[in-house]
Length: 96
Length: 432
Image 1 (tube, rainbow over the protein chains, first blue to last red):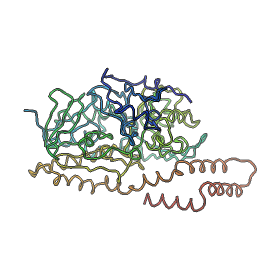
Image 2 (cartoon, each protein chain N blue to C red):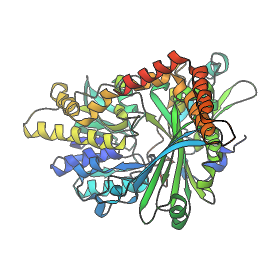
Image 3 (cartoon, chains in turn green, yellow):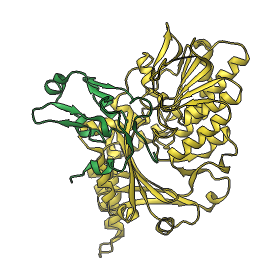
Image 4 (tube, each protein chain N blue to C red):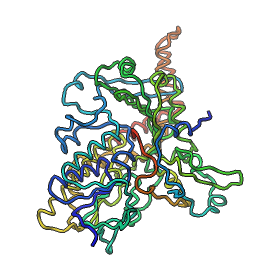
């Protein structure tokens, strides 16, 4: 089954803090060379994490639901720098 | 000189609101800091509200709280790929006021709760993220926010910052959460006319139905699905342990989408309009995974303290109750003129130990481990139960005694006689 998560996220309300992503990779080399599972690219509920063709993992946190999955799932490498967005930015749940 | 309060409460969810309300009512100066644009805009829950905990804080909450439907029927479904076996419990006694539990919509509920807190005298600032705690040695003396001149001081800080509990972690009070101690839940809200909900679920007025589901919908992962009826919408979701998502390489929204296609679930959503998709972690590690709950100048309440009873699907009631006890501890100490030191805040833990909170946390302390190490409860049994029902209910000329033999055989083949006895024993011990 191929699901377009974008269609789901499209229903949500966001105030994106342009140019100030609240999630980043600490050491990109670690993702490429030391991590086999790359679970972040599978388990992020907003599909913020992608494995590129060259084996590099990238993150775009615009659609982030601020759950914390990527940070906790990276337990072996602890390679995710994760903060909440600045006050007022990020996901704004209409219903929650 | 930066401002100083008696207490800073970080977060305006159920635990933070409970604490701030109580403190403000007792005349302490309270600053509450919320990172969302308004209380609730960062918060996610199923959501069921259990009346009891809120009643203790706001006895007249039913007068104006935004509640959706009171629950008169609970369904428990065990699903395989194309069927479910279930029990329904419906009672007119649930239709007698005061109602015991309700569905609710968190963004509305939290906003309402916060208005009560502000009316009681607490100062709320929104759109403000606390970046870390201010420490003097081991003692918490305030918080650093992302506002200009962001330092704010207090005699105590109540950490009601939710499941991720970043502040206590940054301060070194507890380590990072482990994937096996949190569940990841995803859900959607589907809007449909009130009459459709009434017809579809056999309810009238404000009556509501909840359905809890286990079985193939979680692909063998430890977890459950749920469907709750709101006034003009239905919430559908599924949550499983994060370690299982990781090990089995499952994508959460695909899991939810497949669940929605189940032939027993699809008709309940038909014609609805999906208006929001959310994800949230639930701290389900239980008693054995709980962090330290207090120290010099700080206390942890709600999800941040892993206060969730996963077996009974309780969390927000534990959040409110822990918030209340944290506040009452401070109120008591203040009245006695004692400082908010670690030695004195031990009373918070003592209060929790005496309440249902810790009693329940302790009662189910082995449950997470039993389910983690025995996937058959989420895998084999749903299949077996469903097959058994199908076998008995299919009229095909085979006599019932033969059918019973077939069913017994299928259980023994899948789990072995010792396996079955062992499973019964494990469950009994864990629930004892």
